[in-house]
Picture 1 (cartoon, helix red, strand yellow):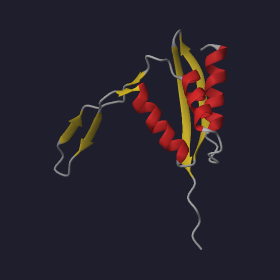
Picture 2 (picture 1 turned 60 degrees about the horizontal axis):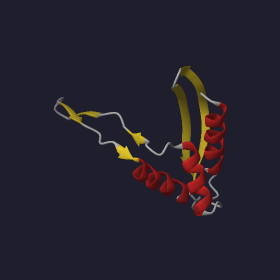
Picture 3 (picture 1 turned 90 degrees about the vertical axis):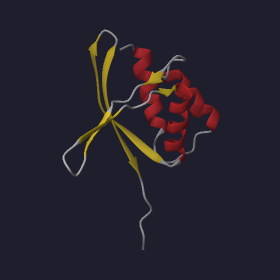
Length: 109
């Protein structure tokens, strides 16, 4: 894990403070600093257990960089806050990262 990556990651996480005050161009710049131009996100495959005990497996489809940006932009626009829980280098090009997302809901009277 390079110093530049950790700095870009911490700056990106700091953007998600729940206030949604950063201009869209600045949010795009933070995203671009963190995600490589050839980035693609490959989620884990889903396995669910039906009521009758059958295991249902579904293959998750990879997300392109643009699709990932759209998801992150929607989270930011919704006022989501993000907290870094764990960050550790575990290999030459491998980092363990755990973050917590929280969306504040307005309290009803």
